[in-house]
Each structure stands twice: as structure tokens, then as C-alpha cells.
Amino acid sequence: MTGVMSTVIVDAVEHLVRGIVDNPDDVRVRLVTSRRGRTVEVHVHPDDLGKVIGRGGRTATALRTLVAGIGGRGIRVDVVDTDQ
Image (cartoon, rainbow, N blue to C red; front, top):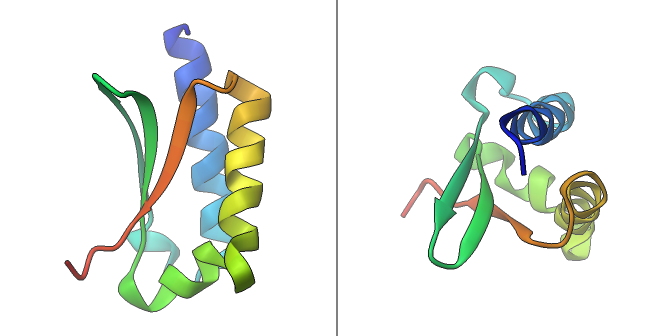
């Protein structure tokens, strides 16, 4: 995957997440590469965690589907709980 495609994925996820949370200034999205592959990490304000995950995980699943459509199946999406 090229650097441009990585930027497109991160920007798209960040734009969508900022649109659904109450604290858009606290949204951080980054692409991390590890032995397990590439992961888009989504960090949000603790009060917004439920909105990003969604009822029954639907919103998180939609984000994963979007990333798979843009960048292929080799990229995971993790919504990181910052309270831990």
C-alpha cells in the first residue's frame, strides 16, 4: 500500500468519526504497522466510545467495511479504549 493510500484511509476514518462524536477535537486516528499487519487505531474521548462502537457494534463494523473497501482486507480497525 502506498503512502497516499494510507493517508486517504486515515483521513476518511477521521472525517467520519469526527462527524458522529460530541468531542471531535479529541479524535485521533493513526495507521500502525506491526507483525500482525496494519491497524487503523481510532482514539476518542471516553464519553464518545459508545457512539463510535454503535449499537451492537454496527458503527465499528461499518468503519471496518469502509476500510476494507478502500484499502483491502489486510487492514484492521481498532477502537481504542483510552480509559485503560
